[in-house]
Length: 305
Image (cartoon, rainbow, N blue to C red):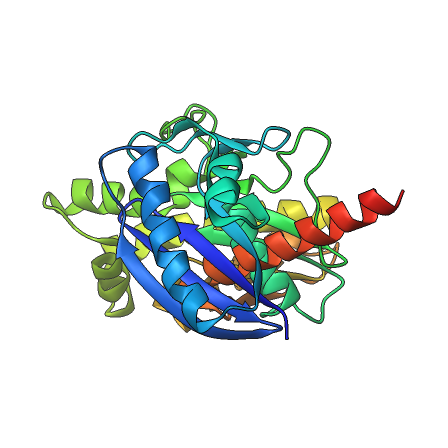
């Protein structure tokens, strides 16, 4: 049976796991080294070699990394939260030392692939995955494949402008959605309103307990998110939206209100279906493995032409 290793590189930890056919079998998590990109990739190599001892049938490796990529050269141009991750030849470095094919994918795209192919949207012909945590990322899946758009930026819902002239997210544009609806935005507004550091989880807890200020903060964020989802529904009409990430872990309170707002702003056009992500923190690892499989299949097809 075919096995693939997926790797999800984050700012504080790296997760490596094995996907055998459609079953997620094993996961190992290690701290993300702070000494530069070579130390990060060397740690991944060591972890993969340990996994390969238990799963010698591994055929390829997929790596999910945040930030901007050069797909033609299979490099990470810049990953803002990972020390030293600038112009990193991920595929070349890993494939030579592991002696097997390596695929590279954006982490949000990888998570979306996991949900679109094996997770909450596996039976949908089209879906949009949105992750809401420190920032807001997204991707679009059509017939089991990522739809990247002409310039490769399709799905960047976190950077659509929601409040012109509003707050500026890191590396973004003033008033972008992630500047007004992400976990970072909610914490910023709550800390200002309550005059003390206040986490996203605390704000939602206070809102559910009836605190009017907290309710205003979280409902403002959820309303902006619902507006953006309604806009995507009108433009692309996906069958389902899958939402994951730390903010979404609030649960039914979050999903119900976001869906209500989305339906309000899409009224008269179409219904909006929003479902929770299935894989949670494992989505990035599983999706990286799926991306590697798709890469291998594409290369095999190209070799026959």
